[in-house]
Image (cartoon, rainbow, N blue to C red; front, side, top):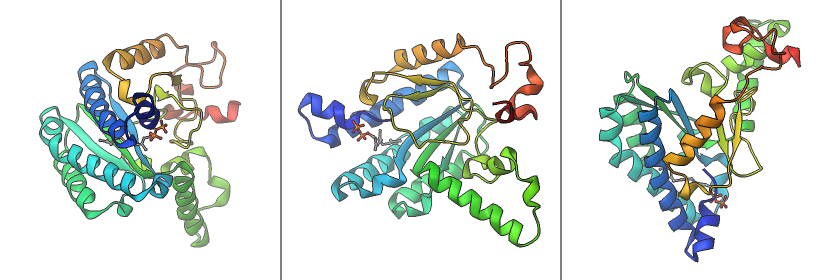
Amino acid sequence: MDGNGRWARLQGLPREVGHERGADSVRTVVRASRELGVEALTLFAFSAQNWDRPPHEVYHLMELLRRYLIEERGEILDNDIRLVTVGETHRLPAYVREPMLDLVAASADNRAMVLCLALSYGGREMITDAVRKIARQVAAGALDPESIDGKVIEAHLDSSRILPPRPPDPHQRRAPDLDFLPVEAAYAELFFTETLWPDFAREHLLAALDDFARRERRFGLTLNNTDETARPEQGGDPAEEG
Ligand code: FPP
């Protein structure tokens, strides 16, 4: 959800105001996604690297998160939305972790939409964690190294316990740098926008979904041999096709 800082700078306002407007966009986009029938929405709310921002900015972001989790609790539950998280959430302060865990538990049986917040998330950190888990199984003799393929790696990612079948689509992004769901997003359709996150509204989400609807999915195959059995979640591994 980048662009909060640039949005604030353009308005001559402190970065914190950009984040506040960004939190308003979160509310708008979650509501619109639910209304439009989006199955799962993952928002990159705080990266593992964001901890190194100035302490007052980190504190402000944590406050916004806490406020969001408390204020939106009713709407999330009323709208049958399941809240889940990816990332090193144990690093979050208790005043964020507690309302977060409370809402994750309270919404666990909801089915209309998954709202996934990536918190203290880093793609490399998640891959490192998965590799460690796999290495432990190999060391214990429980896993044959030759049997490790794309699916085994995905199954050990933090996201595997919560997200629907991959790839996540469409993948909205404004900035050119990316450490977001690097494995899960293989063959995802990417959508780049010039819109700064605080300005991102229902119409921008609609434009992204509309663009996605017109894409031709090939998963690394050709038009002729792309069929249901070739889709990653159906058993084929298009990564092997190049
Ligand atoms: C990146 O923009 C954005 C963040 C580090 C924080 C995103 C957080 C929110 C939108 C609000 C809190 C979250 C929720 C779920 C309520 P940036 O600061 O890097 O801006 P820039 O790209 O313009 O520098």
